[in-house]
Image 1 (tube, protein in one colour):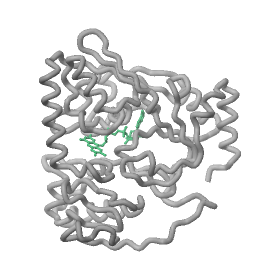
Image 2 (image 1 turned 120 degrees about the vertical axis):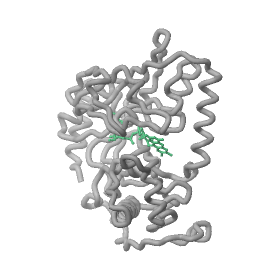
Image 3 (image 1 turned 180 degrees about the vertical axis):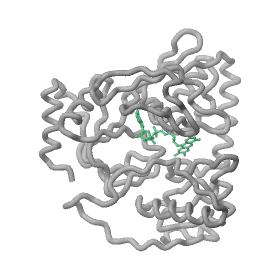
Image 4 (image 1 turned 60 degrees about the vertical axis):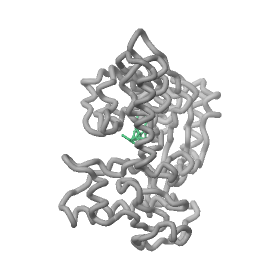
Length: 337
Ligand SMILES: Cc1cc2nc3c(=O)[nH]c(=O)nc-3n(C[C@H](O)[C@H](O)[C@H](O)COP(=O)(O)OP(=O)(O)OC[C@H]3O[C@@H](n4cnc5c(N)ncnc54)[C@H](O)[C@@H]3O)c2cc1C
């Protein structure tokens, strides 16, 4: 585990940097299961929720000086391992301003959630972000992921992205230099703090009707009432990961409380008390079965972060044995893991 001295050094660096207010934005030993949509993950050594860009700069610099790593999380495309995260986890939920600029541009801070951004664009009569209405990520994480659906993705709407480098400097990059691809951007090391989007004027009612149609389709096809991290695997070229997983007979397959969704085979859900190691074992099982049946190697869309095991001194959970189960009638299996 990170030594107490490093934590103290980090906190001292914050105070010495004239940031005593920022110390209140930092918590120790926060369970990441509270901050991820999959609801799994051990403790982060430190969790920082900066109030603004200046507070973020102080946190980033203090971490740099104390020799701690920094990871920014929105939390919706992430599986944090049971051993938690060493260093500083930063949540940008307070960087949440949206500004409409001129007739067709919107600037959003990195902590803004995509559905809120899509609604703000609709109210301003700007079309292009309708597809984002059901994606529960932040602007920052969604730029890193080039989040999208069949109806569109972020990249073509982005004019520029502003990033904070580990030395605290801000850097603004245009879309071309980020070389967006399917669920990927080539971002330099750092933390996205804001982005500018270019959209097309359109009637608000029309944009809202499109978003409603998209949300209805999502509700009908995705397990939105269970914790998950969205699609686990990227779609292979010309095919769909969900189709392959379903064709391999894996819908409903379970390890402990981790289960391949009955509703959408590319979602793994947490039925209540899953641990990250059960979810990861199920992901491996699904990947192996699809490869064996169809010769297709699925690539992960979710990001896996953190320590596999708990740091020394932390209480250990009992050793788990993995058992793969296929539930013919999932309702009957409730609570029987
Ligand atoms: C129910 C559900 C449905 C979903 N549907 C979709 C969908 O239709 N399409 C889709 O693309 N995704 C979907 N997702 C996945 C997820 O919402 C997106 O990938 C989203 O863009 C991730 O954003 P986030 O802020 O949660 O980032 P995270 O998942 O926290 O992080 C993703 C990566 O970005 C990094 N990161 C996060 N913020 C920053 C920042 N400010 N600066 C630098 N790096 C950062 C993280 O460290 C990590 O490497 C879904 C998820 C759920 C739970």
